[in-house]
Image 1 (cartoon, rainbow, N blue to C red):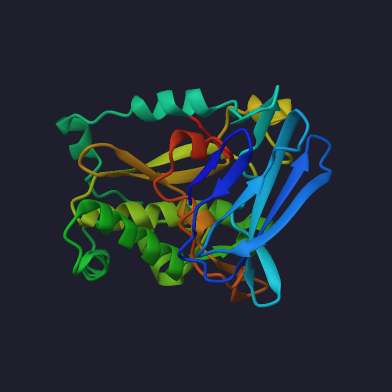
Image 2 (cartoon, rainbow, N blue to C red; image 1 turned 90 degrees about the horizontal axis):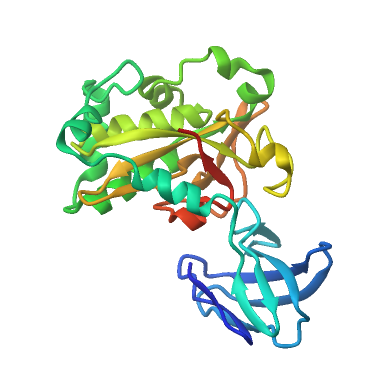
Length: 292
């Protein structure tokens, strides 16, 4: 999904994967709703912000599923600032920092070769993993589409183990790629391990990216000093090398499955998302801070 903001308009481009209705809410710095607008996801829409006074604003985008609306993004969308009648997107505190981290990841042959090696967590040489990888990649000629196919397979196949998280069982669970594939549920580490193993089995260098993420294990947003100064990771992402650059994805957040009270269920019913696939540094910085 693409967005743009000018002095008078906030433009939401068509979201072709959503055929239902879309709801946009704009709130001011005091969290008071200042605008509400409905539109069709496949059509996109523009919002007139000319009459909004100068200040900082935040917005959320929701998509319909049946009679309910679910957040398009798991976290608050980027806000915008109006100053002297001119509007621009807000800058988030870790956009520059995350960009530097991502640009510092090596792309030399020796480093990339190490990101293809099977490990106890990424059993990319296991026959089952290799068979799944070949099946997932069948019909895909390009590295980018293979990476997307792996993302979609893991997001559609693995349920987030909320029971294990709440009971702290995940601390002692086997989150390796093979165990995650067999159990069909895990926490973020399992999503990452499985995706890395499948990618490496396809000859695509892949690595995990520890980060601090807003959400589970944290409260509030970047406005809280505790979150901004976090130095320990509470989440993990997957990075895959496309042949020219590293592509970062949060498959955990893009999945719509969870394991709760001993059974699997859909979280929203909207299916998998691609909001957190191949994130730009700016998109990543809405809710993630890379921990070196």
